[in-house]
Amino acid sequence: MDTSLIRELVPAVIGVLVRRGADFASAEDAVQEALVRAYETWPHDPPRDPKAWLIAAAWRKFLDAVRAESARRGRELTVDAEPPDGPVPDADDTLRLYFLCAHPTLSQPAAVALTLRAVGGLTTRQIATAHLVPEATMAQRISRAKRTLSGVPLDAPGDLATVLRVLYLVFNEGYGGDVDLAAEAIRLARQLDALSDEPEAAGLLALMLLHHARRASRTGAGGRLVPLAEQDRSLWDTAMIAEGVTVLQTALARDRLGDYQAQAAIAALHADARTAAETDWVQIVEWYDELLAITASPVVRLNRAVAVGEADGAQAGLTALADVDPGLPRYAAARAYLLERAGDLDGAATGYAEAARVATSLAERDHLTRESARLRQAARR
Amino acid sequence: MKYLLLKHYRGGPEPVIGYQPLDQWAPDRVDAHIRYMRDFADRLVGTGEFVEEKALSPEGTFVRFDGEGRPPVTDGPFAETKDLVAGWMIIDVESYERALELAAELSAAPGPDGEPIHEWLELRPFLTGFPSVGE
Image (cartoon, rainbow over the protein chains, first blue to last red):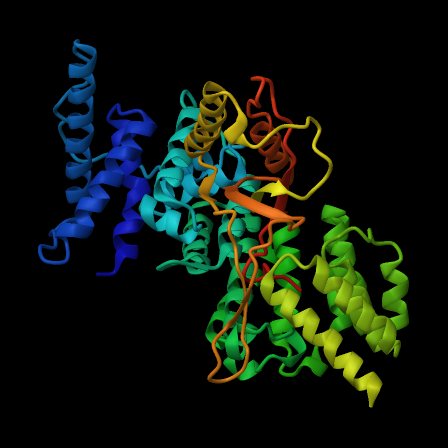
């Protein structure tokens, strides 16, 4: 069963329940229960009209919950048991759900979890497994997020920047359990791009596609990290790169540059080089300058220094690095890399060892340790 | 972000208040201390931040390989080990600041006199498996 087909229906079905008078939190719970039921029954008894099935099942679950609540409180809660006559309203609230689930009042982990459930249509268990936390913890994280949102109407104006940040977080969480979160983030970004008119939504989609297309080459034997310059470029997914470039060009043509479009432009220049040596570093530096003008982010300044080192030589890179905050997580690694290119092998070996100590991921730490060991061995010869 | 909260029997900075091992406290103080820990864990499930909690026996053995076909070599237990881990809790939080806040809260568990024990806890971030993308 292709679960992404069911999952695509989830936000629209939540929207239908809310339009029929359910509050968002109850509607979302009801749809989640219907979804779990769909996974059980659809493989051997597929419905003719999946959306109608899901709406009917979710509405029943909602009414059950209302009745249970009425009984508990000992009084009738007023909800019309019968849905209004006529066809299901055609309005699609999917975009509104993106905004609601990434509402700025939510913490990032809460926004990620709620987005994956109410917009992505994943089950609590799948989300919990993907984040390596117990299901009970994830269930609470989601219900707390919904409590935080109680009283926020579905059609409240949203903040696209927060939505994009949440989707990029999901993308960077990568694999976990049986769910490929990077692929899921792309699916959600693609849907968002289709629903919204913002070039930055397209920019984020392009950025994700251009990174994802190169995923297979990023890891080598035993899960080791392969740096860009050493990646086997024949493993890159050229169709996905072409799609990313097209999406990006369409966005750039609208002349409203933003952070994600600029990042995607840099990723496109990397993806465009048939060999590492053919990389157009001069243009990449120019894009980093654009990006700095937009964000003034210290991380961008750091990455720019490395690009300057490639475009204008390692000394120029080290000079650019002098303006960068040494407290950044990848500062030591960037400095060691530039030192090696500048011919200071001792300094680079020490630098890589220092970088390994402050690395925040296992793959990076192992890679940096190997780099340090390689330079120390070369020095002994 | 996941963090490990390590509880030590011994080791770490000088304790703020000197106290005897739990078995020498008044029984109701022991109960109160243990209840605080359990309530803390329950509360973290409620906030969606709890990952796991485990305790370790203080009796440990050092083990090492001693060559093909030979039995492993063991050593210890060492009654006088400087650093002895008692157990841990793993939390999944939004920020380092939040992790500090929670560690401080756990450190405020009631001690032998019912007042916060000010116990030192060690907070260590987990490495993620893979770096986030970006060039």
